[in-house]
Image 1 (cartoon, rainbow, N blue to C red):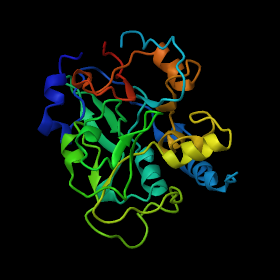
Image 2: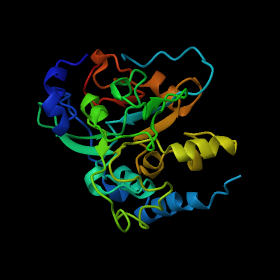
Image 3: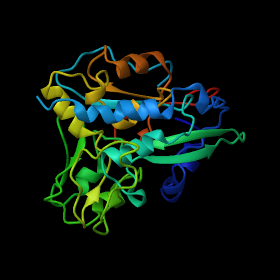
Length: 280
């Protein structure tokens, strides 16, 4: 797909670098031009108060039955503020050494900086699922790759099999908060036990709760992943890939996009808009 892919996605280098895309990038936007941090955090924390009751675009012309949740990350817009990282840490009660949402500042071959973020890609043909001996990790019908912590034996096969370095092993029990509450949000899920694998869930708790309340993930904030809600420049878009009218499907039809290591056949559910100046 991209001439630089072979370098940027070798097995070892992928752990420390996610893209060498070879293009100029427009990241001159300053944080001061966007809504104040406090306003964003207040909106995010308020969610806890909801009652519990590739070319020019991707071809998405067929409406399929059921949901398939996916995300688009616009590398032209990302300013490297890491708000998405911090909101994820708070909402999912994740410690720094186990970050589910990975941020890596990058430099193109031309010397231009851009910002790369990477959640779990929720692959349709996920290598982590294929190697799990207990089926602790599996694909839901809605495209999410999820964990059953009661079945996980901590063998870490899934971590080795994942080509995207987005799985984390919980080495020890932890006391206290993740360090990001309450400023960046309130923990919405139970803390995982020592000895299991963890990863991004697309804030599955919000998706399932929202659907039960008649909300639309990707459109209603209470049903949308925290990393998407908190972004001050709307660099992340979430929604149903099977719905051609969803925000994420509309963007995929409008904008050039690519997926990481499509040559592996993993069929990720996370798409990227390349930095300006790059043709994919």
